[in-house]
Image (cartoon, rainbow, N blue to C red):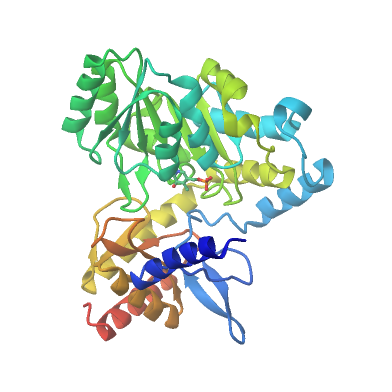
Length: 400
Ligand SMILES: *Cc1c(COP(=O)(O)O)cnc(C)c1O
């Protein structure tokens, strides 16, 4: 190994550290849930978890675990092959058809992660004759996926419909054959919902297609958990939905693209992360399928999640913190400087509340925050406990 190279890399790490931007990973000693066990010097301690994507609390649901265990016995541990060589298991098709049906699409194609779904969806569908118009706050995987396609790229400021319209006109001016608007359904750093009705109206006016990445919505937002197209009333006008099984739907792993049949069929032929990567492990596919079945029927969990979000939001505002407005279970507590977000996260940790500070480059400089996420795995008492801890820690640090 070249010493010069390692010194070069170490200098980069030192820069990150000096800027106060190092992300430190903690370890859990048990399952994901409302209350978790965090590894500590003398074993582990309990904490209340406010930073998981476990919105409906299905990550440790006994029926999900049982389905995964059963699938392992029936289908084995792994497929050891990509699908075009060994094929898939019946389980994989069941999962794809179930998520497609849930989202009202002809079919769906499963990927190892939504990062792969977004990485693979654009390049086969859009070429140099076409235009992709992308929201500036889209997830990194959309940005990467768009870069991998040969289509003309246009960007509009987050949810700015005037800019979107200007970009649609520019794409037309550039002679684009097909136009695709790509947006997150929920912008995960802010918890804002995309203006899908307005986006779809513009798409109609300019003859564009719409792709929504609904990772932070499928399963818990909208009627029956059909996500932001259902929540906003945009419905079937959204042409392509990408999403994950790694959040609400059991939190295992896996992603998907749901769309009209020819789109899914072409992705099976051409999407590189699908063609050249292993199938989902059977227990993962079965757990995700069971989680989807539970989520569809979980109006009670969705209602609880909403109540928690309202309760936490009201409590934290009353305690004097600044939060971004919103209707999702993502509630960002705004702090400004990275150091402050880290200090508050640490103080909360000491009070038994597990959160993460978010700062540049994940969010803009000066917009550091603690992004809290509610979960149906929490109780109303847990929410109150968390608010009290925030208020106490905030006072000690002079924030409130
Ligand atoms: C989490 C997330 C992804 C990535 O999903 P994985 O299945 O974990 O790869 C993609 N897009 C958005 C908007 C996300 O929030």
